Image (cartoon, rainbow, N blue to C red; front, side, top):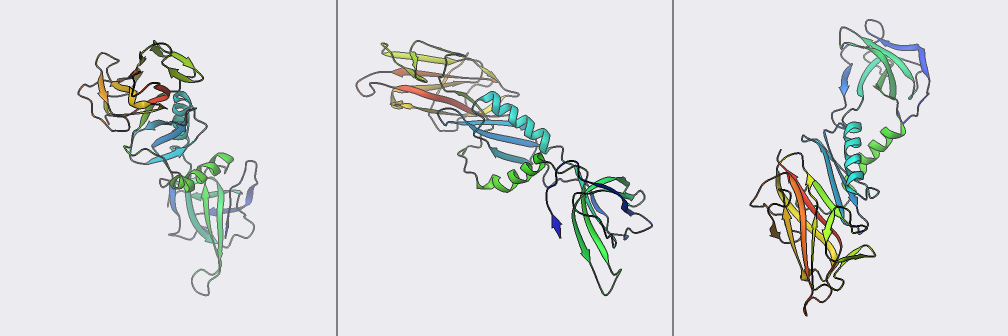
Amino acid sequence: MFSAPFLKNTKSTDDEAVIEGENLIPGTIANFAVDSFKSRNRTRIYGRDDARMLIVATSGTGDREIEINNSNASTNAEADALAEAYKQDLGNLPPIGSCEAFGIETIKPGYLMVVTAPILANVHAYYRVVEITHIISKTGPGWRTRISVEDEERTIGTTIRDRIEKEKDTVQIINPNDMEFSYNFDFNSDTSIQHNGIISEGRLRMGTSSQVTMTTTARQADADITSIEMRAVGNDLGGIKFYASVNGGATWEQVQLDTATVLNHTGRKVAMKAIMTSDSNHPSPDLDSIGIYYKIQR
């Protein structure tokens, strides 16, 4: 048996073919359809920002989800783009199939060959051979060849897809509340936030103020937000109160970190607020990164 990925520009052959009514063994042609086992209609990307806080992005709907850990996705925009790209890639996998024919001598994995069974399976096209198995039996049709084919060239991209499928279960991802999206700030700049503190070395600090309030702009969701979870990385977090809004900041509700929360108001515009207070118990609170994670109505 041969089974391997093949790159572009491998050979095609007109010397060998599987043809209904000639060498195709009746009853053996099967599964000439999209590989639904590997096909996915929903992709979730897990990235990391500069403070190593989790970034989450999801694209698509449905119950055939794949989770992909990609630490190169360090911003929401990068994670969103990857989620959409993987959804398109994994949702449009090639048709595959298998059949048996009376002994085919010269075909090899990687070759393009014609398979035609217009009556039995409405199939007539060039397919790329993925696996071949030669079977010699003392009974039945004698020497026959079992062939697995696909309607796409095996490329680096499809090999990566297979590797993701094998490795996805070995990646440890901390998302206990199964959140679908995140909105992250790592304070490398003050873009999209308002505050009365200072940003220094990628942190929001108190400066000379005894109390600092930070609010973010709102991020638009595709549907009503059903639950949220806030996370933060920083120092002296006990001196910081955290608030969430899903109506663009018109309503704020205080929340506990790392806890899934169903807010008392509804909306599609998620935003965060933090109030940092310096006192004897918490002299120097600061923030390295802050994120809000959320699910939407399906």
